[in-house]
Length: 531
Image 1 (spheres, rainbow, N blue to C red):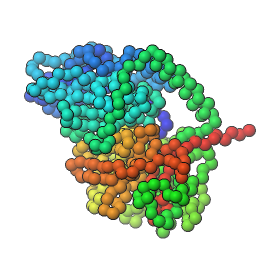
Image 2: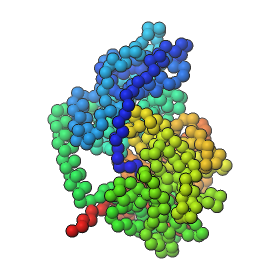
Image 3: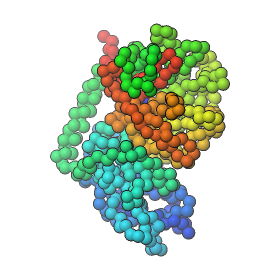
Image 4: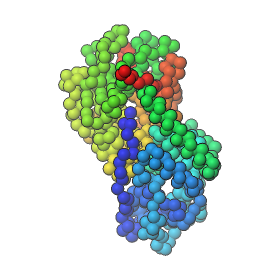
């Protein structure tokens, strides 16, 4: 799971190569945006388009419709001030003069119009790709969807044809500025992938578009929202004095019959909880078999330290033997210990997103003695790395926060959970090759991994996290329908939520060994004070 700290990175100014506009014999792309309210994400989008060879870009920056209501800026200001958020993100306004170098050169009509505000005129000679949020154009529609509590469906369409689509999300649904900026970053990812010919598309059952809320935000609405924001912050601070939340816990059960992949529901017997001391939580359970017994690896998060380590505990016939013991620690946060056996050796690829790398570890004194064997990937903030061997080929699944721009100006923005990337390799040590259509899926409901991929009755079932209601809100079981160099497709068949047999506010990992099955879920625990 991601570290608690967010938005701590100050971003460098954005500057795009002006000489790009003079490339001869290139495809002519016109970007239609509201020049009365340009933002940093517009400049970043233009800069990244500028890197594409064979494209010449211009900007139609006349004033346009679909913008934010005027008092949205006040809402963003209040949130940034009260929550101490940096005002250097993708939603920050910029001087319209920065768009002047990309004004049309008058050399003829463009070959394609990218319409970001919804009013570009469609002609037989020039196709238009129109950006919409829950079916409506403009940033106002995006904010309206977020204010209504939805996770917006973003589409890029040419007439009735969907060029690309995604279901964007955030881990900060209650903070409109953060949610808005996370959605803008992933919208940029979707546009760039479409321009590269790799636009991801949602399955039909994920394209349900809700009723679009009115984009307006009245002064009364703004005042009420500001009051609620202040009240929530006071309540959160008071609650933080008394409880630790979220506080994840691991559920386990002895397998004596069908597992969750067969049941598609919580077992009637429920789950037993791996106990903790209240000052730490356990999450991300990954079992592995060693000499005939199950050893469970997990994230061990100490609240006072504010970061996770990897711990392990052995299981006997009746459950855990003793208390989990740390086996891998680092100066940075570690979680999601994807552990596996290969060639008579135990290996691990934990999540360590803040470092910008995915590293492979080898056990020299199992269950401890982990030493770094190799860096598999670098230059990206990847979550929940999941390896899978298909014949003689290995695949690596991970959600990527910044689409390979780990050191870029928006490296501190974007959701951890809605953009699925794939890599393949002849060996789990690498070299790993990115899938040509990355991101292969943008979907806050099913992009992020939630455990090992399992082959069952000839089908590949992938546990996924459904984060529409918040991080790790529910666990989905998705059938992989395509996995090759040409594309990726999956279909979510089942969604499991917390309930009477495993109460709490979240559910996001599923794994098993031959003898035991494990899940985890979120809750809260009272703080312990020393008198």
